[in-house]
Length: 526
Image (tube, rainbow, N blue to C red; front, side, top):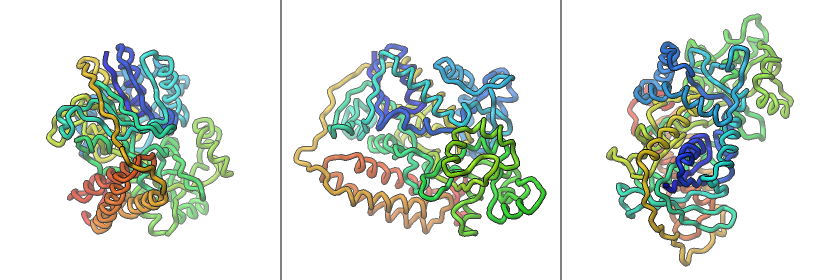
């Protein structure tokens, strides 16, 4: 029996916990808030995959779409492995109790941007919530799994301080209820903490997405790669005074169309289908269903030219009853604002959505150092990891698929190669440090950080703006480090420390790139 700590409670962490616990391992799941506060729970679209392995044509089409979306930077071996295993992992989810939408022909499949066919299973427009429900219920019933909510991972504990090649033996965590710092020993640690959307002023991510797992692993010697590739979802609902609300790409898969203000006027005055008037056709013949990098840049371009802070998503040419049946979560949210599918133009704009880069991992999800060797006992799965699956731009609904496939592979590797080496771990040393009494500087620094990333490291970049961001991040890093060394950790301080580090990794990677690809678009390189 191994004692394994899993940091994060989304689809990747919970799926891995069940696989490992079934083999009689002792599992502790550490999560900052509650499982339902994860990015998985907020995912609307679905999970892409071919259930029938014998359907070679469908498999090859999914592979081709993924490679095309990744703009030449996908690892084809990884893509083929993930697509091939998709059916088995989806059946695992079904056996756990996930209920996907069905129709008379079996599972109801939808199409999203970049996909050449309908291959996405969903639970109406709340797929993530349905997956999280089933996994959370299964985890709660498992005798070998303990879930510790309101617990924030702070730093990994190395077996030999300063030598990541010797592996990890535990983690320091802050109990957010008591303020106590706990030192938790482990044979192995799995990081599944998701992304870092809070770096930008507009994001579809939950508040917990502050890059904690990525930052703590990098501080422990891990290498991050492809950090310049940050995906902005093209259609987040933009209402005055409200946080962005994701409008699933599946809505465009059913025929929704993006128009700018002039296009909307022409559509209302004309007698043609709205796609004819879409600005997205200037960027791709796929129009509103082009890949997210293309559509987000198209939205950004017309918004900057027009001065408006949004474009319009049009659905009034579609079957209103069908839309409301397929997208009840979105309809409910719209109704609060007096809007409705099939009737009203929806104000939407791009918002930070997914971290395509992340911790460099191998095919078994083992975290790598900069020389390509592993950190023993440390695994990374889900959004926090960079597997090579997504290349320069993630294809819609491949994220849940990648998460569950790599969660399974990591668990398999841990089961076949168990580590039984529990050691004593040192307590957090904080003698003489006072409590942090003034949080106002942290609030201002976070606002500055998010403003910097939004203005200078967003959808469209320039070297001069990236250099400006580098200078600001250097200053913020020094300021945060001063506070870190002088006071006891708080959630706000820990998260800001992590966000500044991740922002630096993103900015430095963007500065180092000599050509545009996928989500990284620098106008100086055109």
